[in-house]
Each structure stands twice: as structure tokens, then as C-alpha cells.
Length: 174
Image (cartoon, rainbow, N blue to C red; front, side, top):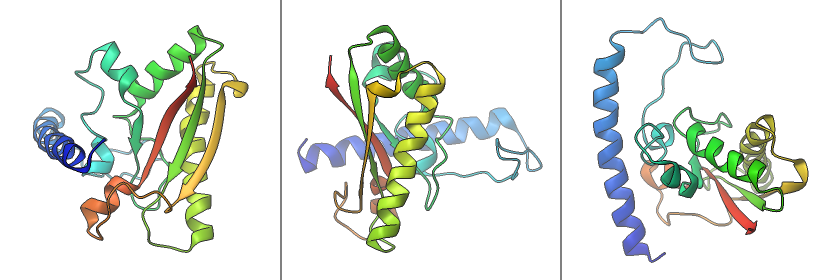
């Protein structure tokens, strides 16, 4: 994908995420005391949280095509908004036992090479474990970490770093 096209997609994604975040704030009201899945009570916002459109209004085909999942800084927890797309791909893998995927883990450039490679692997494994919990065979998933070696964005802004913190699902055989 050309850089110009990628930038356009990201701009559209950010606009939609902003609109989604505004509407979800009205739906949920004041839940400042609510706990997340880890019981921490924290809430996160931004590109890493919504992960390009979320999963709420996408068709099954769009969910299956969504193969990049974003993470918060120094985190490995899969976003709730990415889970529908991951589940769609998991269902496809379960239905097609011959299909195999590569899960690539990536980080932003901050941190040592060793730390980033380990963090990228943990991110890819988070997606892999979620897929395995839905019945995908271990032999269908391969995990690799590139750490900060393959950046999605060349800059050094927080927006650039948000694009770098990701796991990418690549189909190897279909």
C-alpha cells in the first residue's frame, strides 16, 4: 500500500474513531468506577483502543478482512474493539483447517531491541491465544516478532507510535 493511501486510510479511521468515541461516551454515561477486564478501573482512548473502526458496525466480510490489531503503549492486551475481527478470522481458520496464518508482532521504536522483540512476540501471542481459545489449531498459527524493525510510520510523534504498536495477521495458505 502506498504511503499516501495509508495516510488517507488512517485519517478516515481516526475520524470514525473520534465519532465512535463521542457516541460511546453518551451511551455509557459516567462509569468512572467501572472496572475493565483486569479489574483496574482504567479506561483508555485513542487509536490503539479503537483499532481502525472497531467491530460494531462491520459486515462479516469486513471483519474477516481486518487483520491489523493495535495496542496501547507497553501493553499486550487485545482491545475489545479488535476481538470481533479476531474472532471472524478464528472462525475462518476453524472452518478451513488447511489455512495457516502468521501473526507478526510489532512495537514502536522506544526501548531496547531485545525488549521490543519480546514485547512484539507477547502481542502476537495475545492474538494467537485468543484464536486458539476459539478452536484454532496450534499448527495453523505461527508467531514472529519484528519488534521495531518494520515501522508502520516513519515519524516520532505519538500518532506515529500508535500505528507502530500492532499485531498483523497474514494468511500463508488458503
